[in-house]
Length: 432
Image 1 (cartoon, rainbow, N blue to C red):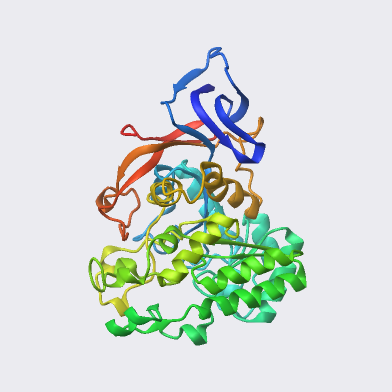
Image 2: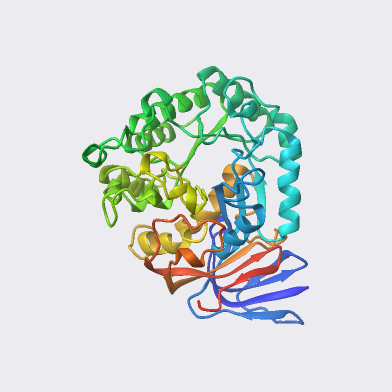
């Protein structure tokens, strides 16, 4: 099978390409990229003026909930949401039920992925057995089964010694340790950012240093061991400073990600437009403006490596409770691209090549995945973007099984025109 993507602007930072080019896909791989290519029997996909052909987007932080929490999301519904959001691949967190600390669970996820036949799924295994922070999981067996990294996401790696051993072991396997950085003694039973708004609303607070203290611990251990350490869903300005300083010192393999809600929203959302809306309850919490601005600065200056969604679906009934009792988290796979276009690219904070780096090139690099590039011979995972397409976010129309988003009703500029995985068009937006 041959497909010719014709007339688009190819942005492929990994290979230094940025210009109007054709892309020939043959037998599931990139065959040629050049200024003008003949159809030569290929099915022609004519792109509209201004559309962008990019290496497939990769979300390295999603919760697919299967096994054990299929009422929230499944591999099938999660990957349907992924391709609708422009993601050709996702990496799924291990806090399923049971915890993904065993090759059998990894293999189940991969079987479900093959059945869904939409986005690629790369499982991330637990650092410790049951994510209890007591005993290191069998990382080697998990890597052999298909895991591309390790985390106790939802919980921090419990002790400095366990983190050190995990970095050493994962370093030998060539994969990163991803940490949900949070000091449990400082977080306590907090539910919102510790500040003026939480105090006036009677909500227990979580200070930014609860995150940054753990970031600094893990950076020190990464420098000690030489292992690769990745900060998940960074939210605090102190954390940005710690990562920036580590990168300036050099000699360590420290990377980080930021979610769209942390570079767009602040704790003002606790009060506006609706007080105590559980769709603005996430962990780490929405912080104050200085923290949000620090995320934007980190994205612009290169400190931040990756934009990831932390897609965390929850059933409507679970969110329709008091703020204190509601679970943390929001869905994000289908809203990320419009939010990045509207609030970063069109706002003049970053350019299009930087957007592709954050959403494709760097996630592939951090997890050592085969994507992030349109080089000849690479898998034909391609995202076609429509930078000026109007997008109206409607929670009821999301393909995710859950609808918990604070962005319902937002009107944005920029979206996804089509998603191609292995040379096959798995999503096409007829309205773009």
